[in-house]
Image 1 (cartoon, rainbow, N blue to C red):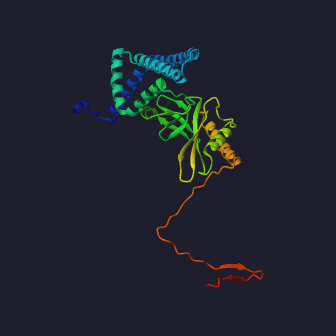
Image 2: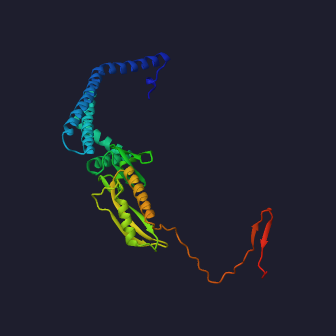
Image 3: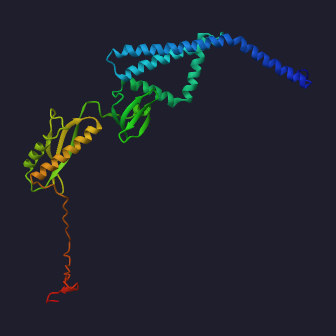
Length: 313
């Protein structure tokens, strides 16, 4: 900086600052029409997005499409319109900006943002693929690793799941996309199974008939589907019998049906007089154990303790 450019007094500094502020203010006043026009473009973009989304929703309601696919089409349409509106807004706000320059700048910004927010974009594209092709919808009960619950929302970045115990879980879409997902309510019915047990002394064929008869009285079983009762295995103290049946696929339907079936099997075996055994244990000792006989004691009416010993003592 040359010596001539250095202000000699406070007055010159004040004049310089005032000139700068006035220049900025003048430029701002000159750009007010462009700012107003840009705001109008934003307002028109908002109105266009709202109206287009509403019309698209009504049009898609007439078609038999999955709810997730409808949401995806509406969101992609809204995102596209907003990007176009913001591009027009930038061109109006900066008159020297051409579409080519705007798209080039947008590409550079996209690369920088992509490296900085890689996880966010990964979840975004995973959400699009989930909404497009995945077999579960809002309201389905799913299991993914240790997460089991009902799907409340499938957003572009994350999914919201309500556990059967009541907790709310937000799951990144990339987690659901990379891991196996079990859809428990894909069908309106689901097969259940329990294992009953009878003692070895019981008639196995009769036990199977008793269980089959008990299952006919269960209202939660879908009797149009096969009910199967087969001996399963030899346990340590019982013969195991596997019972399989079909019921509703909702978690409450499964718990209700399981409880009803277990109660019916127990009542049927009890009424038939068949033993549901406790675990038996047989202890074997390599050497004989010494047996010590303890004298028996009784309490007389007088409250005194009387001991009886054998004459051999």
